Length: 311
Ligand SMILES: NC(=O)C1=CN([C@@H]2O[C@H](COP(=O)(O)OP(=O)(O)OC[C@H]3O[C@@H](n4cnc5c(N)ncnc54)[C@H](OP(=O)(O)O)[C@@H]3O)[C@@H](O)[C@H]2O)C=CC1
Ligand SMILES: CC(=O)N[C@@H](CCC(=O)OP(=O)(O)O)C(=O)O
Image (cartoon, rainbow, N blue to C red; front, side, top):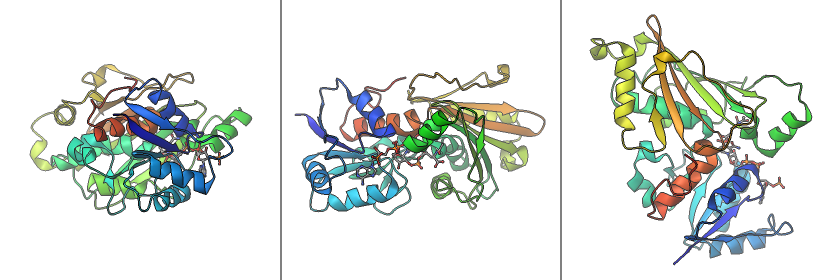
């Protein structure tokens, strides 16, 4: 039997990418609303009730409204927005951190934010393994392609090709902070400096640390070995998250303006004089959004997690 899927927000950036990844998947039947009905409440309610799984690719307020519209149904939900990431009753859709079983059995799954995907992939396993201190003022520097801001930011960058770099989040209150703090198990929210570059997609999340943050027991070996091998151990079974074992041979990481869609994520550890940089490289629209939604969908349907992913 096929699983009926409704993508609410299917005409948006994330929704379209999910549709692309579902094309040709015979396990699924897609419920599609035409242009005239895609924002019509009654049509959305009907589609949300008809679906076995609804994938919400909407702004936060519309995602909350969609959840309310499912009332009285058994529809399972994957929400790509930030509306439910730290909400009670929702499972955080990061299988490599929360465990595949939790997602397989969940009714409500909230996809991680794109920046938290990189930050948490690096920090959460190391805090959990008691290698990094939880009570530390971490900092996160990150750059994203402009598709990370959806249709509005795509339009802005395409209309103004003179923008070379956009620093933002200057109020230090970015909406991703609560999920970064909660799922890394930190005492303090990190200081987060996001930026956008004139590339459509792609993301680098960089966490610079002083080696003072490494718990005392781990000082017999060079930090790069301790950090890399702990990350490798954590992701040993993952086909999605890879840990680069030769980071010391690299002198730069590049984002390309014409990058192809990619649903994986690579982690790097660079070491200097009593300092290190933990870096995640991903596609904001891949493991940062649509690829993660497909991975969760596969897991929720009991399918191999990488089916249909671009790895
Ligand atoms: N882009 C990315 O890299 C990532 C995005 N996300 C999250 O995914 C969600 C979608 O983002 P994104 O695809 O980038 O945004 P877009 O703005 O590109 O798409 C949002 C879509 O939702 C539609 N929409 C808005 N309100 C309603 C409504 N009431 N009913 C039905 N449809 C509605 C919009 O239609 P219209 O344009 O006509 O208003 C648009 O098609 C957001 O919550 C975002 O934060 C998460 C991780 C990464
Ligand atoms: C470049 C850019 O603007 N990015 C978005 C985050 C994109 C994303 O992850 O969406 P969620 O907010 O749903 O997590 C931002 O910083 O608001």
